[in-house]
Image (cartoon, rainbow, N blue to C red; front, side, top):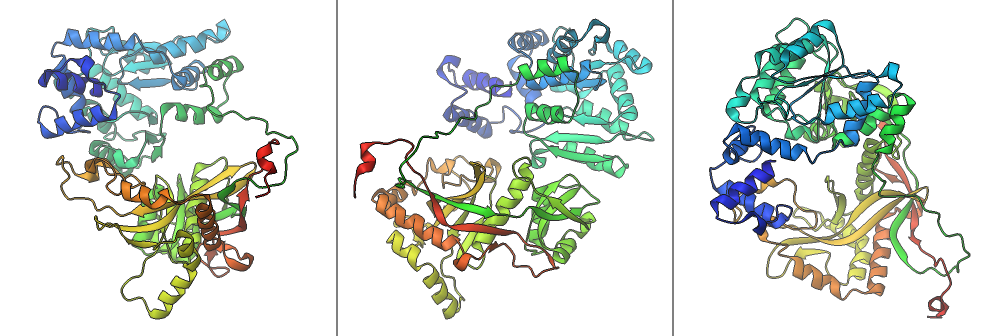
Length: 584
């Protein structure tokens, strides 16, 4: 809705027809966002009042706002998450739902799920909006569940709250129901930003009671770093009041619904209805060809077989819940060489026990044995192994690990001031085969631009054919400095992490792209084979030694130890063709 409102205002102010722009085109999106950054027509991007201000700017009349909502809702259908929630309501596993949305998707999903049950087991949800708050009050007093309470109104109501003035004061009766529910139950917040002060004031009022949120408070978010200040302050205050507070990272409503479904027993009719609505998988298993093939290798993979990797990590229990990025920052600040992954109030770590406990002392860290790692089922376990493997491959090699959310990489470490001559000689000897394969310096500066560059590889830890592989993709990394004031006057720090391939939006492309393409253009199969072979020899330890992330002495902690095969993978033809009869 905010994107649509911005587009309408942009067209109005610039005298454009809406058909002339495409709000799905990234170029138009950046152009529109840049326009609002340069003007004061709306609050800044992400401001809590942005939605209300944009809605009122486009539709000043309440009647027109209701019509906009009704037209939008007419196009909506329950998604997979709605159907799971509706089934939980029909199965009486969810008693009370508060929503700031106007649409009927939750109650429609609940009614549809209820109709799938035998008549005696069916349930009729009570729906209350701000113009029928007495119904919500009665449900709360009589425990007449389920209740679906619409804090900002229903799309069919004459009262719908959208603008700043409307959102400032919550309807008194509906506010009372929300506050009383918070005093009686725990709450799970899903997909709520905390933008409107009226709801946040009601939630803070709950904390003034004797026993707020007695069954805990769970706030789901795509990233804790994007929580609004009002939400963070509320969660901190709740924790101070003794509430069991947890921030749960979850990307989408559908993903949350799938996770809940795996741990909840639903009646068979409801489970069948929900699974029928499941999206068609993008990937489907296929039978691999079993025809006899010739033994001649055809393609060499830039991938190494991981013959063995850690099955257990050190388990550390915390008195205070946290997130993986926060733990990594604490370890980095304490100069503690370790890798960690958070899973609720537990951590899975590799490193020296005593150093880790000292670094995480503010969180009340305590050793709690070991935790089994299942990288197939648990993404946090795969992430922990991925981080640890990259650190292990860089250890005792002239390589620098770069661990980023967009993907990890290793780059060649160039000579530094202060390095002793013996170390410089050893590094040059270690990199000799790689330098010969490239036929060019491995580090330096881009001609004409002066940007530092380093040869390196992107790394991936992936399962394939019931085995784990460490894939590596050679790439020339260019360190393009971030300007203090980009061309559009917008600080890059607000744009998130830079493109790992070197692109910068404010440069209108990759300034080193042409040079990088020319550097690789003449490297054909023979050169690629040499480069892949050189990287494989550099990454795998000699004499079949394992890859160790930290080289920890026995009893001092748990090390991340990997056994990597010394040869890359090869493909073989799945059918016979005269092409494979060639002698050379």
